[in-house]
Structure formats: structure tokens, C-alpha cells
Image (tube, rainbow, N blue to C red; front, side, top):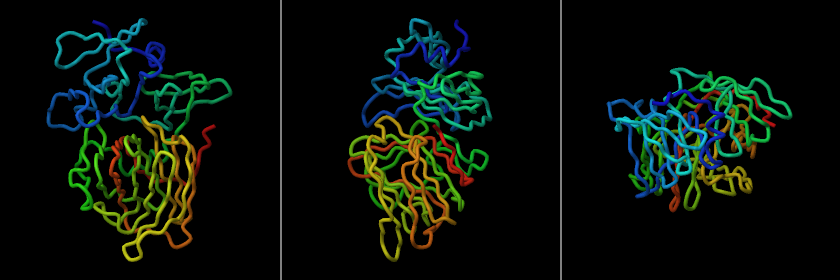
Length: 342
């Protein structure tokens, strides 16, 4: 039997460009009535899935287990809890490999590195020059990544001041009164919005905050993102960002006076079909909200009136005709600084 020891660079070399290696990330979610999802064995704990790796195929099937090795010819060796012997797959049939079993109990990563082939690697940046990025990682030691392979560097702002990280289930989330009661569900580390409706959670948003998550959009590719909402089951008093594939608009919501447009932004090719890292940073003192996509600043909005902070909840609103997947949500205190990424 092959050992479970391997290096990320070997994986990058052995897998095709579109077969992604995802570390501390979520595997792609099958659409309605598409693909076969084989879950991890149930043991009454939300951590069961996170202690195993996830193999996602091009046909949207998923298989939990453990990655053992990838050979030079691209053969992928996989151990399933339901199989006695390792299974060998062709890497050309695989879309993503999510590595969770190799993660230690506690990790701290300052940045997420997105590569041009779609791989996402968390770690701590040692140095960056015109040719190479040196990255310290918990899963493969120190990596030297050619700068030409870098698509973006996404700082993990406020890692030491984390208010919320998830989701791991629907526990603590509230499906709103508006829309379809079954509009939102949870699967494989992600909230799935499949019809019109809202889902929210009180995360105790601080005065200086960062709300970051990974977003996948299908269909009409539209979503509403509410911050500082006074209640998780509706928008009420809050700021609502309407986000689509090429457009962003920030609105101020009020129970008494309705909605007011603060401003908008045109975004050509900023929302990727497969996955986009979205971050909203806010400062009550400056009455400002910043939108970042894949670590790049898109827009700053400043409210000419008083900052409209009705409460500490975040709310996601799925739209008719859109299928939304939200994963790797991190809510934290923000230190007010922007780190240049290029």
C-alpha cells in the first residue's frame, strides 16, 4: 500500500490544469438532481466530513476518504472507508481534491494564494520578489512558487480576531420569513440557495469588520449580501450589497424609509463562474464599506448620512433563477489596514 506522504508540488505537476487542489476549502457542490454524493460515515459529529479528504469528479460526483498518492503518470490512489483496498482513479476524471485529513488541529495562515490553474494554497508569506513567492505551509513545509503562477494573493485579515468561521451545519442560521421556506440548505461545508429566500446569522459584527466567504453562482448569477442587519431572518435596518456577474450596488435599508442607493460599480469578468472570494470590510467611524473580490479592491462606498448599523447579523438573499453556494465564511474584527497584494 502506498503511503499518505506526498508534496503539493508533486500534485501540481501530476494533475491537469483544471483538476484543482483545494487546501482548507470546499469541494464543488452538485446541482439539483446532478451527481452522486457519497458522504463520510455518520458518527453524530459535524467534524466527520472535515477529517477526511473529498474527491470531486467532472460529472459532479463526490467521494469522501483519504488521498494516498498521485503517481507520475497521473494515477490517483484513494482509500475509501467503504473499500478494503485502495482505489486507483485517472486524474483526468477529477475536478478537485479537497485536503482536510492532512490539516492539524490548529492552524494559522496569513494569506490564501490563488494560482492560475485554480489551486488555492493557504500559508504564511516569507518573501515575494519578481520571480518567486516563498510560502510557509502546514501541509507541505516551505514552497517556492513561480510568480508567473500567481493569480492573486488574498490576505486573511483579522485571523486572530475571528468572530465566526463556518458553516458546519444549519445550526445557528435562520431561514427568513420572505420567500420559499426551503430556499436554503446545507451540504458539504456550504450554504446552498436554490430559490428566492434569505438566510442569516447573528455574528456580533464589530465596528471594524471583515465578512469574507467563497461564492459560486449559477443561473441568473445574482445574490444579495446584508451586513449589520438588526435580525437574521430579515433585512430590516442594514446595508445590502446586490452582487451579480458584472455589477455591484450598495443600498441602505431602513424599516421606516425603505432603501436608498449609496452607489454602484461596474465589474467586467470579476465574478468567476466556479468560485470567487468575496470580502466586505466596514468601518462605522468612517461610515464606509469596501468590496474586495479575490483580494483585489473593487469599490469603496461612504454613506453621506449616519452609519446604518441596526444590529450584528449577516444575511444572504438568494434570487429567483439563481443557484448560490456560499462556503468558508469568516467574520472577524478588522484592523483598518489594506495590504497591497501586487
